[in-house]
Length: 385
Image (cartoon, rainbow, N blue to C red; front, top):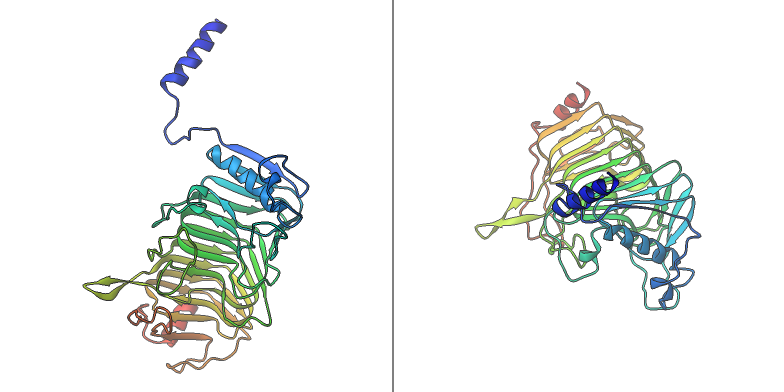
């Protein structure tokens, strides 16, 4: 009987090697700590040193998981100092256990490596490390960054530093992480991403000496004219974001909370006429406190829900530029925020106007609001209904 069962098993494996939707290899789960090391491979690189060792270890483990078709990489408690970009491929979850601290470094010591701006790129290494280009949403899929307990990613005020970059990808979740100390860059750079969830995160701390106004969460398009997304593996095809949910997050002591600072268009009959709208954007149950410029900067967004958010001591709470129906604006609260004069005469912390990009992207046609209301007074009535 035992021989019959074994024979049937191997017969089934030969005839039916894969179930629908499965990968060629079993997924893999790995665990690392700040003390984890490797004996071969990158361990022998001339660039291996005290500044780069955590980068090389995590890179090794992510590549092992990628070869298996995905899995879970668990980081145990401790401080991980990262100098260079880690590529997080499809079907990978990174779990940060209670007490994990990710610290951005701006030095690599001796060797061939030069420090990179961003800690994590959501992209398969076969694209990120080659001359291949990603288009639309055809890149990495099903990627999660999950914080369990007190987890921080600290950019240490390094200029242009970024924590997580998503581009040309789908189905990404970021939750339970505290992002600290940005300077000119962004905590989250979100481009050409479909079905993104950011939940239960904290974003705080901007350098007092930062020369530019930048968003903690930047919703942008990869665009050669605006300079959006300056990475080598993007096709710069102007793909907007779609189906974005940001909820139960806190934004404190920043220039901007969530927003877009450049819009994109495509040509129709030789004219820049088709807007590349960021669509289905939901921002709810968040708190924006001590924001120096704007809490939420909506630029070229369509089908927006902005509900149950709290704005406390913001210079400006929400800026609407080129926002399109359908539009939901309800039960947001404004406390001790600076009175802002607008062209409509409203004085309730909102700004509502058409817009044309200055500088890069100035070739594009102006954009205008179509939100189903004609004045900010009507918008406020809608919010308070």
